[in-house]
Length: 439
Image 1 (cartoon, helix red, strand yellow):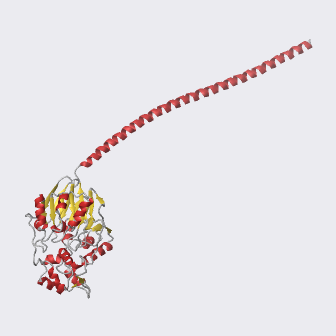
Image 2 (cartoon, helix red, strand yellow):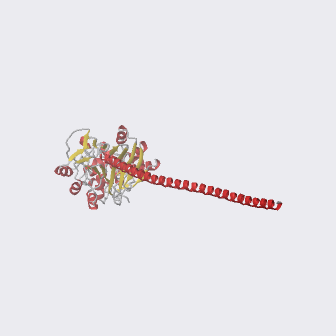
């Protein structure tokens, strides 16, 4: 009986043990199943996140596409606005004025517009009329000052201008002179630290809306008058030409070079002398207006009859400082108007046998030279250049050229061969004491 009970107990324990193990495994299976369910849940959530991310990215791409499209439209609109802004530049330019200053037998022209100002030549050495005029116009700064050539009636007050006005840069031809005027100008440039340039034909400069074309010279050889800096100033549709004392040979060189010479306003070369403004040059420039600067009853007869007749035949309107005083041309780049200080009709000049004291002094540094010419020095009338002979009293630019053309001289008294030099003026030349014929 005990054995049976023990056997039954053993069987029971065995069965119970088996059931316990089975339950544990099931529990484990359930845990695994539960674990697999968690993983499925994580996979499901990941899939959902991935799907949402893909949708978001798709949405983002769409948004970016829309943004790009919107940006392109904005850029397009900006370009349209820019185009409209650019088109507004076709409006008239600010007012530009060119003042042909009345400086007697000399040259000076002030160009001003907006914040810019430019001076072409600076009158005669023995006056302050250019400096005074700049002050009257409240000109405190000049971007460019041009000395077309080193004659005393073109750069005469340039040293004073540099000392009294803030000058950006000075343009000169590169031809030098032994005159005291030229030396003072070069010293003033250096002392005041002013930039210096020697422009050449073909150079183009822009100052604001003003374009400056250099017409001459291409090179220099020592002929100061003939190798004057010549310029064309263009402002919108209106153009101005300045040629200093350039002569017909140089005018022809400008034509041959193919430079664009057509202009509305021409300043007559060499004060209206017949040495300049050839028929061919006049036809190329085709000016509606011509302006000359010279002294009243000057000894050279400027403006010459041939030039005035040529201009009248061409139908050009003529203005001159001898008759009209200071002449101002005003333009907005589309149209222009001419304003004069005085009214009157232009007539050719006439040679004056004696000239006026002021004009003789204006064209010659006689008093100045007496003080500055050191003892023992002389101006050799057979060898001195066109600038040097102008240190002799009564010898201005035109007579200087005559003096050279009539060489050689046997004595200083032979200067009477020059038109306008008579006994009275020879007495002045002897009294000055610098003219000589060398050894």
